[in-house]
Length: 612
Ligand SMILES: Cc1ncc(C[n+]2csc(CCOP(=O)(O)OP(=O)(O)O)c2C)c(N)n1
Ligand SMILES: CC(=O)[C@@H](O)[C@H](O)COP(=O)(O)O
Ligand SMILES: [Mg+2]
Image 1 (tube, helix red, strand yellow):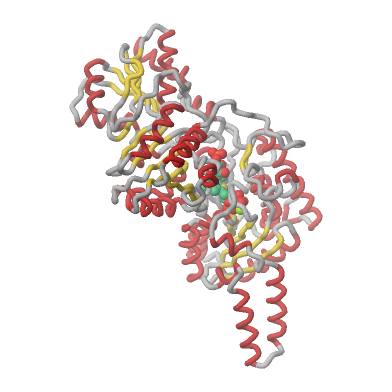
Image 2 (tube, rainbow, N blue to C red; image 1 turned 135 degrees about the horizontal axis):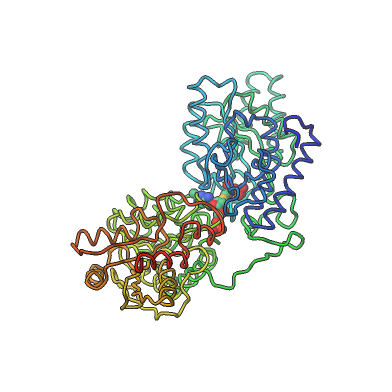
């Protein structure tokens, strides 16, 4: 392909069309983020035309919309391996390409990165050659981190171009005042025309009339996005048509020349170029394989998801108990909170991408006597960590954290794996942490959390639980009590959460190989059942721990500490948790295989440990 910088407008438009086809073709085969990335194609083509990807930091917020950037930077062929194990990542990743400036996956980090880059550019005296350029979506503008960065940028005025890709959608409908300001009627060409005419008029008016005209313009600006940014000390250009490459190029060139922090507000259509996905459809944000002609999904899971079980149970409890309230941070469908928000619009809220605010605001609801459920993915709760400690645990408030996407999440990869929640929550005083093993115990976990008087957290995986429902009788949770699923055996397998399913699968395989294994469902990683562990210490020398979480500070680590502190001797612990490495993307089974965590692989390891 000819370099974008050497193309004329019709070639650039043709290039954008080819990129869209390549994206649609690839995503329809393997799944991925579709509508965000189709909507950003023209912006990215214009960005590559005006800015210099060899030198300028190209910073994509979340970076799920950056497929066109990948295609324009030497990854056209490799793109067919998008999000597959060993293939290219769905997000920007410097280890994959020198043209990917930074890792992203969690939202709203881009402006801070631009401020940091601008500082470095200044310190290196490269202001005449380099400028940071950011692409951020309207949904990402709900997170506090953006305003921390704009606050500094508007004051220090480092040159940077921030392209605000406004498609009036987050994954779901965007939430809040900022999104309203961005999309209100006055954010329109009308204001732009008015502004231009006022400025022309001003040139010929006497001072007094000029003052009046200026005031009038300010009056109108009061209700436009411009005022929001201009009052912070940033230049604002827009709104511009985010699909008109010629106009975008001219606008970006102007913004670049200004040598100031500039927001270019571009209006785009999510899904642009694929009619079925164009507009305000949550479904097309992230999809599995589908038929391009009809848009119909090609893969359907027959198993009920853990999210659905959680959502249905919470709905049932919320019908009976008016004190139950809940929050999600921009993931209403992903966390199953959507049905609660629809059924109880006054008690369940989407607060946008604002995990910190979600957690803290539920703290005061708890203080007022309500029972909040905070439903957030394991990976995104990392954003609200201080709030969990400072605003919930320190106050010892009865907030329940429903941690979805715990464990390996598959194709999203490194940025999204739910690996750390056990480790990061275990260290927090007042926190009770437990996990269900199957659908029935997930329902019981929700019931337990609804009645629990202090902070608690329970986790469950993306998709369905490993353990077949009904294989073991579900018994209610009791604080700090573990449960044997099989009491006797040569060795002890200890499972936690979805790890119980893995332990049971391994126990079945070992049995076929003549080894009987006892299976303990730990249920609580905090507090631990010291009584049952002491009993187990008298009966088993080799303990094998299964949990879908990081080894560091994880379940085996908790058990080892208990053994040490309680002087339970002569035990060797083997952990089948995640090693101290970030876990790559790809089909979950393939990723687990690469980590040696498939039941068959674990069975082999245990067999050789025991039988030599
Ligand atoms: C901290 C954090 N919370 C939640 C998410 C999940 N998430 C990914 S993209 C997205 C929507 C972003 O909307 P926007 O910035 O408008 O981009 P668009 O997809 O519309 O282009 C959300 C909520 C995330 N990536 N990071
Ligand atoms: C980009 C992003 O962070 C989300 O779109 C994420 O990919 C959603 O993951 P789930 O498909 O597990 O809801
Ligand atoms: Mg958006």
